[in-house]
Amino acid sequence: MFRPSKITYELFNLDENNHGWERFGENHGDTALAGYIEGPWLTKYNNMYYMQYAAPGTEFNVYGDGVYMSDSPLGPYRYAP
Image 1 (tube, rainbow, N blue to C red):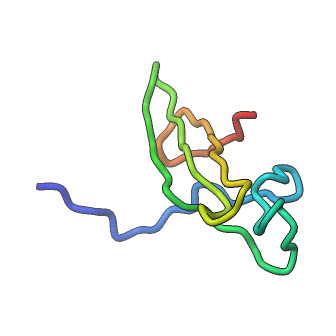
Image 2: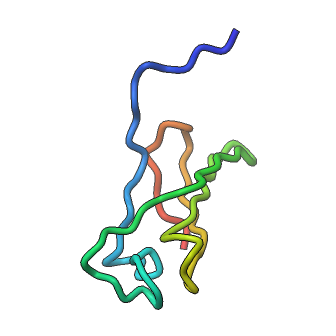
């Protein structure tokens, strides 16, 4: 039987200063509100873990996906440009 962990792991955070596409709002223009991560998906391929995520929101014209990579499912993760 699958038993979820009772421990929460922080794998990565948005980095709006280095990844401008993660900024919130139409044309990434809303600097008053913080962006957010949605729809994360983990894939293992050739012994590497790829964490795909979406930001900042489907209602905006600049919605996009990003990927972080790691040798372990619990990190540490590094941004895949």
